[in-house]
Image (cartoon, rainbow, N blue to C red; front, side):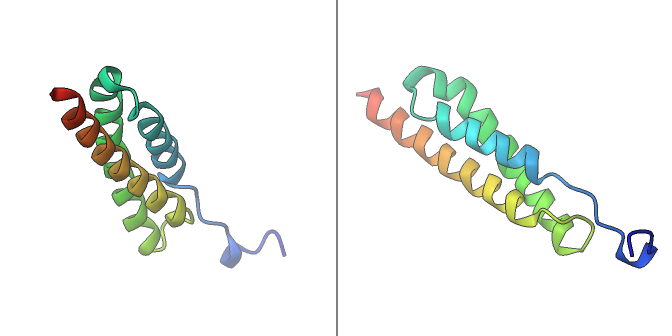
Length: 91
């Protein structure tokens, strides 16, 4: 029953952009100087998109909550890596 309105698929939310930004932040987090300027803002964006996307998925508005949560976690991990790389290269 493809035309049944009750089984209409939910739209994709912010999971894809959150996951992409989280992976981007994680890749650039290991580069000492570039990481501070690329990975840190990307990590903040990934965390924000991940939280918003996960909230929308929990309310049943979208169907990509797992990707949104994964992107947010990767963004958080990238932010921590940038912080520790920054501390390691300071001295």
